[in-house]
Each structure stands twice: as C-alpha cells, then as structure tokens.
Image (cartoon, rainbow, N blue to C red; front, side, top):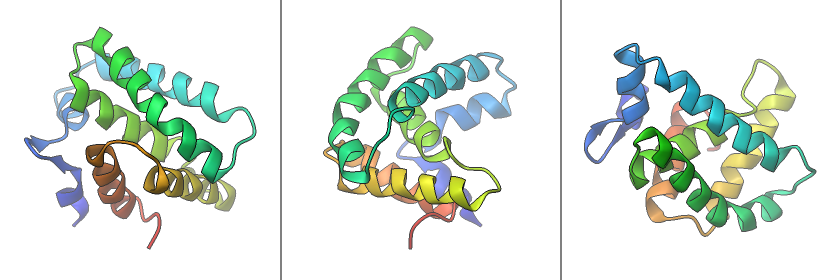
Length: 129
C-alpha cells in the first residue's frame, strides 16, 4: 500500500531500482551514508540542533554521492532514506530517535525536495502523524 511513497518525480527511487537489480554497489553507498550519519549523530543532539545542521549535511551528501555517479537528487534520496532509517529497529527507543530525525527534517532549511521525500518516506515508515 505504501509503494506510492517510494517514487520520486521520475519514477521508482534510484536506490530501490539498484536493490531490485541486485547491484552490489548499493551496499557500499549506504555504508558510506551510514558512516556520515554516525559521525553526525554520535554526538549529543537536539531536534533543533540537528535541524540547523541538516542543510549543510544535505550538501555534503550530494557531494559524497557523486563518487558513486549519483546526481543531486539521487544523493538527496540516500540522505533522506539513510537518515530516517538510521535508528529504526524493533525498540521503542530507536523509533523515538527516528521520530526526532523526522522532526528535524521537517523544521530544517533543507530543499523542498528533501523535505517532501522525508514526509512521504516517514509515512511509509509509520513515523509522525
């Protein structure tokens, strides 16, 4: 039912297409993304503090994902998917932290594309309203 949230303007999200096609590079891409988020989130943070940093983090992701041949929008996709899913696990604490990341995206100065994707993916992940 939530597959509609996994589409961008041009169709199915790039990383889901790579997963579908068994592309081995997708693991490397998300490992790099996870490392960037780990560096960002390992320090203590608040929703407002993270929101303030997300704009520059978005640009960092767009740049880092170029090494995998991703364009700006594909880099934004990895940014949002990896950020919203960073804490997701079966624990209540993990879901609470993921919810705070969602809130930070919502109030950040990230691009409208990032905020829109975050909103759609949050619904698919049952985060927020």
